[in-house]
Length: 257
Length: 325
Image 1 (tube, rainbow over the protein chains, first blue to last red):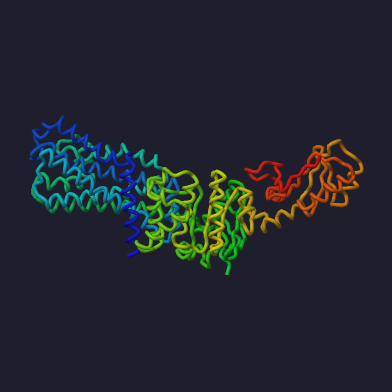
Image 2 (image 1 turned 90 degrees about the vertical axis):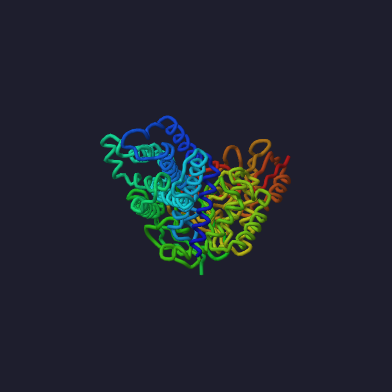
């Protein structure tokens, strides 16, 4: 119970930190929103290409990609914030308190997941305003919010692991462009059938593609439990790898002092 | 039971870098113990080991009765820590920080809120409590850091260079707070590179250099070890041979330095009046007269052959000054 209270408190601080530091919050919403606007306006006729899945509009197709992109950036931002904590000695304050070590990481991830929920709501609102229809209705929207939260949490483990390993905000920030490489090598912005090799093969095995497809599913078609399960499994895989890396990095950091 | 008990404590960062090379010390309950030394002497590494932030590579340490390696959680519950450079989140408010610290120590929400109010009042930050820490001055940050370290009423308080970089007024306010805490029964272990801070606050001082304690005692006893106070006298009309006879009765005359007569006087400033009177009666006119007390820097020089950083070489700790015409 006490550990739960600590995780909630640290999660709350993490959310406050994200909202109070514009350089952490702005990229999460502004960059994916701009990309969504530019791509859907500029390449809207992509839906007419042979092989493109049946969708109302390219905007509908891209909405999930923008959400997952923002969730990826939230994970990166969480890592940057954690590295800043390490750099300024704030992590030492937490380590000197009688709390389990994992609570420090869990608190940060709880905050990242909460930011993920904010992101999902933001893009759902944009979607509704600009005419997207959520085929699966309110329940579908709720599932999307949960999936984006979980995706942000999973990506957050990778950011946290990098922060714990390097202790450097600039190194974590340096991985920012990687987010776009990973995204463009997935089905976030284009169906894999229309990608050229080797991007097509990479997109077909990229866990991010499964996450995006699961988030997209309630918008463009009827439920597919298989796609939902695959999305959750991919999220779980990313989270598990990230947690394992976090654990190793935290142990190393504690050993080195 | 001592509040801190350390035996042959060591920390190596590599085969070549031994930051702490075997420290033994004991701090009694209710004592203020100052660790005095220059940057890189091993002060912070020692504090990090005693506060469980760093695992020792040798020796043992018990804090508040608990082993720092085997019972780290119990140690963390018993101690308060204010680390170097006030590790505060500039985006939080002072009140948020103390309340968060209360939660970290398992204090219920309402009680945490009450203690935050009390502590902010105690360190004079009630009005600034809802402002972000980023807007605080250096002194305010240190006071907030101190307040947050007290939220769970620790038995032992570790302060790592609590006044480094502060102006004299802020420094004095921190000293007053540390003294008040100590009067209430809190054991304080502080590191400092300021001679005056160790002298003013500490019941006992450990001087650390190159990872080893080179001297340890009360400030007065340490200073006594390196010599008695000396009187530096400048005569108005050059040297007079009979002044040696007059001054010889008050203590040992040391070789003159920079035109000053040097007289070692065990009584220190108390010897000024009789010396001035005797010189006056002998018709010897004095231009200036200083009593110079040994400083902890003198102790540091005596033990290590180097001056402490921040202490001006040769800068005396002048107790009293008098001039006769």
